[in-house]
Structure formats: C-alpha cells, structure tokens
Length: 255
Image (cartoon, rainbow, N blue to C red; front, side, top):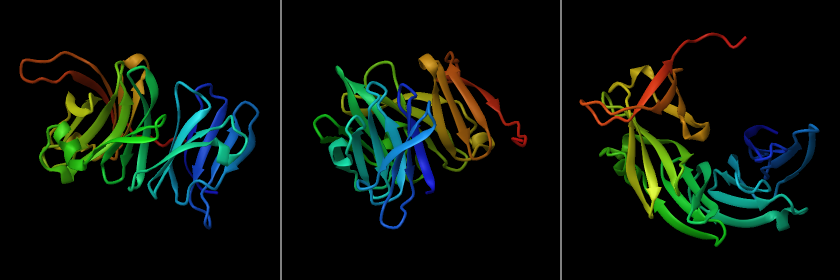
C-alpha cells in the first residue's frame, strides 16, 4: 500500500503510517518499532488519501489523522477495536495538509489544522468542538501581507507559552517574505520576520520546517534546494528583524 505520511509515538515505541486510498479504503498501519513487526491497522475511518498523522506529545497512545476529504480523526490505540479507538472526529470541509497539537490553559489536547487551500482551523478534541477558522486572507493579515493569493503556510510550530506559531510565506514577485504569527487569545498576531532576500534568494517556495530542540530556532527547506537554520538574533538599526540564519545550498548526490 502506498504510504503518504507517518509519525511515531512520544515513547518511540509505535509507528503509524497513513496510505493512499486503495479501492474504497484508506489504511492506518501500526508497527512495533522495537520489534519491527506489523501490529495491525485501521481501515474504516478514512475514505480518502491520509495526508497527515500526529501523535500527542503528552499522551503517547493518542494520535490524530487527517485526509483529503477533510476528515480529522482522533484515536486511542490502547483500545483493541477501531470503533472503540475512535475518540472524536471533525470535518474540516477542506483537504487537510498538516496537524499539530498545542497547549491552551492547563490542557494539551487542542489541534491546529492547516489545509491545502492555506486556511487554518482550531479544534478542541476533548469537547469535540470546532473553535476557530482563519481564512487565507486572515493568514495573510497575520504576516502583514495584502495579497492573500501569494501567501502559503509552511508549518505549525510549538511555542513555550500557550498556543502555537504559524510559519507562513509570500511568493509575491520581488517581495518574498517568511514570517511567523502567534495564536493567542483566539487571534493570529504578527510575531517574527525572517530576513530573506526580496526575490527569495533562489529558494522558491519554502516547503517545510522543523523546530530545534529547546526552542533554539528553526530549520526550513525550500524548492530551490536551500536549507536554512534560523536562530534568535538581534534587531539592527535598519530593521526590526529578530532572526538570523545559516544558509546551505551545497548540493551533492546522496549516494
């Protein structure tokens, strides 16, 4: 079965992979990482390609999965049957691109959901309640861009306080940008500007990002083959930038 995405539990004991739709079914498959054996799977809860899987960082038996049909399901793998394992579901009514767990107040069971149309949703998994939707225009506004048609979401990142960071960019010709906004108090607000060249510096679209351990910075990768390492820096007199980067565009064959 063609695998599209996967994630591991917080204890690194279980790997879950999501597949393309095969016939009328899409599969969530589970492996015991330590023993290397296939443990089983679910195939009744998704009806389209599974695009994202995320285990809860606080509860290793809980994970969320999303698909191109807009379904976001939350499972507890301690349950033996798929019907019992399915804890809650949410119809995003849009193809799901990314999922991220985040903290709010004293709880850590909230989901941020980004879509392939560059919108963002917030879902309370405990109460099975949709809380907020941010359109592509809202995302553009949060990174201080006017032309929303040029704005795209790169990733959803954890932050030390409550809520999350949304990393987004604009590919507007000769005015590229890469910025974060922060989700707090039900709003997306501007947060950090990443100093890239106005023409993008050969990056093209920034496709993905990861967070460096202990909130020490970020790593991004782009269509142009450029990997940037971003770490907190100091604002200069000429700008309000608060990040600097180490750039690598060295290209060699991986074999």
